[in-house]
Image (tube, rainbow, N blue to C red; front, side, top):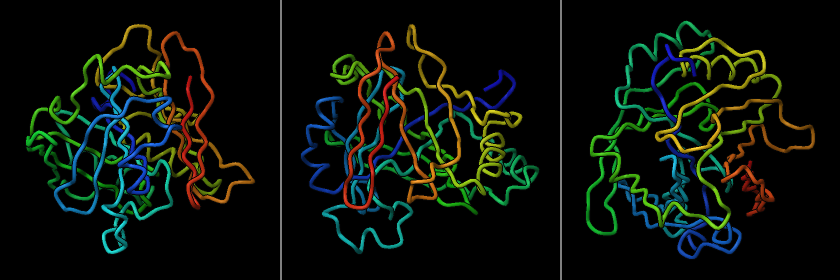
Length: 265
């Protein structure tokens, strides 16, 4: 992101799991990451737990409550299991400017009016935020926005214990989007419009994170053409950065017809 662009930061990434896996995270998660409590969302459809990082970002482990098909049906995350979405945050979302940038982009993508969201924490605290969702495109192709109404540290309660991970992960290196060739130009223009920057020839965009971590590198959104052997039009990989940048083996976990993809840099 350039200094004259809007002050957005990568906020969190959404990893959809079966409900029993959310309640009892498997070793392929807990051997790498420290899982913290979450709660049930205000609509009663989904429940989450959090993986918090030193840079103020977090991985949201989410599931439909008791895998109820009625709760899943028609939901924006009614998708195969895996990384399904990601969010930016800001302290002051200029909604009209965002919409104007998309009108100028010619992508046919825009954003709906902000809507209220929230949940209750396990210790009884009420969290409130506003979410602003993209329109004209499937979820996960471009970020949605999560803007806090209650203090952000309530929603993202990072401390030394919960942000220390077996993998050595200290924060997010960003997102890697693999998309169909026909969508590459459009989504690259859309990402530029979100950030208020010019489209990059290499389809890689620098993004901020909420907190600066010593020796961390610049986070980014990378967009490239999906591999020929992929069965998906869109494949999302969460990229995490580790202390001293010691890469670990990537997580590639098949769950039903979905694939969890997390890499370490």
